[in-house]
Image 1: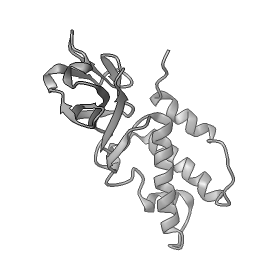
Image 2: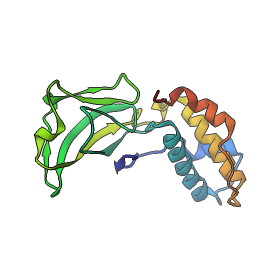
Image 3: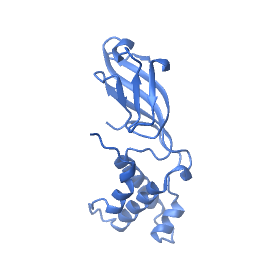
Length: 186
């Protein structure tokens, strides 16, 4: 399940002026359309790669039967703000930071409880584990790796060219640019 976005990114990884230059558009009639297409292309790239490009605050929920380790759905993770154990009635208790570890070196990033600790210890009738965290490469578009920006531009060009609503496959070059950033569970 994708995480809930608590704070959307403040900017897009590709500026409107740069996108218009890439598309060879020299008028302002389509600025709103191109801006919306940039957002759509960014969201598609993030979905395909599992990476948040511009830093934002996210909320991921996991079922109560989760193991002692849970994998966060978006990366790169900078910090975990808070982990809560939520019971059937909706009451929650915060899990102290000294009771778990965040491993950002593995893909996807993982939160592991300390030895001999279980999620059910933190609240009776546990239903959900909520993790509030920050993910993204940085706050500025210059922090985003170039392959992501190129993938956004290619998807943008395809969408702009085929505005008639044709359902086209993802360009092969986009897949090629994102392959190094995808993780596969074996």
